[in-house]
Length: 211
Image (cartoon, rainbow, N blue to C red):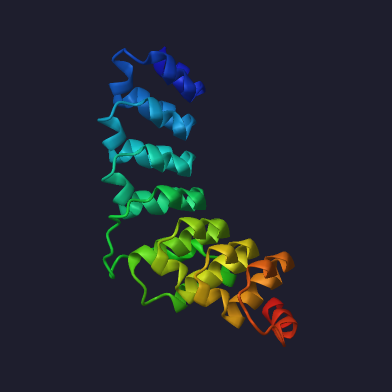
């Protein structure tokens, strides 16, 4: 009966605080499968359960915030979360494994993004995770580490998705004509975040960026 209730409305787990149910794996799993952020009412033990957390972030990427620190540094959990919602990048652990051999499935990128992915082939796992997030939402750049905001393939990915994200790029890249042109091509008003001293030829570059 309880399982059926949370399977219909994950929020029902909230009224079960103080009982044994927030520590019942089947009950919590049913709740997060219906509503990912129901993870907030799970016991700390189950917020450290990989299968439970994976189910939660598949449903609601930003439920990553509610996971244990170790799972916020788990590549598969992080991939799953940011594939669902790019802004889940805000909750990725700073201790994310930076194994250069880590593979992020390129199939999540559509054809327009494959060149960006290939250009980032030599980047760390952390930067490739950021690229995944930007594929979903360019504004996720605001949550990226400083080194990522100064990485041209990463910033190009962001501004091509959302020109406004130029504001979060490093000063050096806000002076980069290719980056600025890509941003302005996506959103002309993003030009306000450009640090170019000389914008001669920028509009012709913008036209090229659109093609």
